[in-house]
Image 1 (cartoon, rainbow, N blue to C red):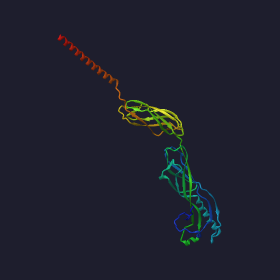
Image 2: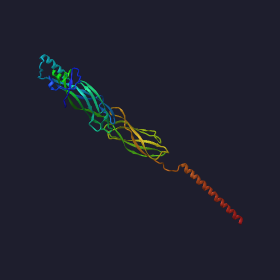
Image 3: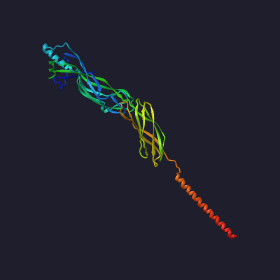
Image 4: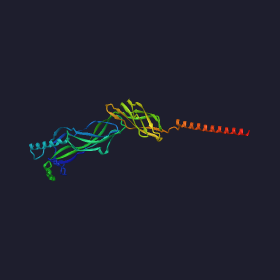
Length: 354
């Protein structure tokens, strides 16, 4: 800690730049006390995964003066009663020892799961007297894969405070200084404050398996398996798919019920593909609606269900087969009639030759 001298008068107007040394000052009292910083979060300290939050931090100065010590100092040419009055005035000035000045508070994360926005990481307060508070604002980002539990943010706070006040003697006039009553020594101090935060326990779903495929012009059943990869139960869960043309479904929501930590549930969706649908893999959006442990309705992140669509098999229809049979029968009858006509002609020729 570095002691920084400064001038002061009754109005605390520090306008002079020549600092009298100890030969021009006396020290009647020594105070015992300094600022004590405390910090707390304003509002709910619990956050959700993936959340970007405006973190309001209340910083408070709880410094107290433990006492004063009267030093054995006497000025010449001043009677005792006058000097004691001067000494008591210095003691009043010593009471500012618990005031923090030029405060700079830099928020830091103690974990890789919580990030601090750099543009808001440094906040400052000009002055904070003991018993007073000030609110600082920071922006934090919670990683989407953060495990539930308790975490800690660090807040190094650097400030200056008055370490000592000395009374200027009449000899200071030899330095050309006027209206100067005191010199003040300041020290710089850094405290590392700790801010506890917690990450809410909540389910997280992922698609672990998809079975089945779609066919042009047909309705097929697709089975989708969802897994709760987190530490809390998802109650009354409903799985939902969102399909768009050339796909369609009459029932897009399937009930899964309660899904515990690490548990898997399978939903069956019947999906119709248009006859002209392009043969390719289709990514169908899916989500799960559930009730969390606090009784609040929540939704999972969007999940992709990848399903292949196959071409329809080339088959003759019943109508086509009937038409072919009719044509074959007609050709047979025509051919049969032609043969009979030829036979009749041959028989007629034979009779004439006889």
